[in-house]
Image (cartoon, rainbow, N blue to C red; front, top):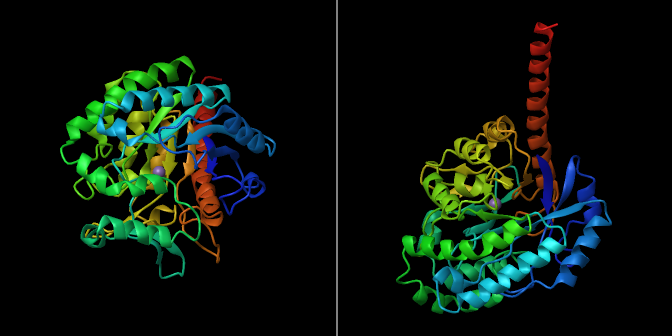
Length: 368
Ligand SMILES: [Mn+2]
């Protein structure tokens, strides 16, 4: 397991590479070029500049999150081929810079959705939260404005202004797109990009929908075990993998996250995992709690153990964190709570390693 940390670049992140470097066990950065619109080719020189900046601090840049998929590809429009060719070219450029994993998602119109980016918990920390009733009642455009206004001056990943502008038109276009259509459009995309990824030894890793259910009547397919299995089978290749995100899938209590982790890790389809906890309420609302198992609804120990038991060699990052100790940062992406999350994850991992070593030693002495 290699530990990583998402970083939005020196111009758009309150956290510095020097700070990240000091977190114990840190392997590298999960980076991206966030100003490039979905569908455009990522210029090689910009990728190399980012890599150089990160490498100079002694950190790796092996993962990109995300190369966004143009809406026309998700919609299956005739114009998609042009955007798919651009995507293939971006994969080639990323390969030239030594990138190993590309995270992406296939959510129509919206990326992740929350009703509140700074809900105050009893201990004074603030967290991203989702209140079902609020989201279901709100006009999507009002929701967007609220999200933009409470981002502490940072742009939010996945909420690119140019995509959001076209929102009304997008809703119309999706009117007749059902879940099966979306699977078909994903397969069309994967059939064209996976061979390019394979050729360049890159793993494509789809991120689950967040939350993992339909929002505003839009179809969503990266939501549960059955659908994940269907997705990895759309194109049977080690390059067709998952960014298995415990918090996204875990917002639905029907998803057994340790079992999902165990299965897809055992078939080697998790190049990248996001690990965070969520606390689910009776009515389906949820908040993003600290990583500690007892603070949320997910058993983080069992999730890490599932990876450990299956000899997981991929990348992990703490996903979002709470905002604590007065930090001002992009919601979910402060330094302190994510660093605490890492120490919890590494504490579990190291304990499991120790137990394994002791077991092996005992087994060894039997034959002496
Ligand atoms: Mn995630």
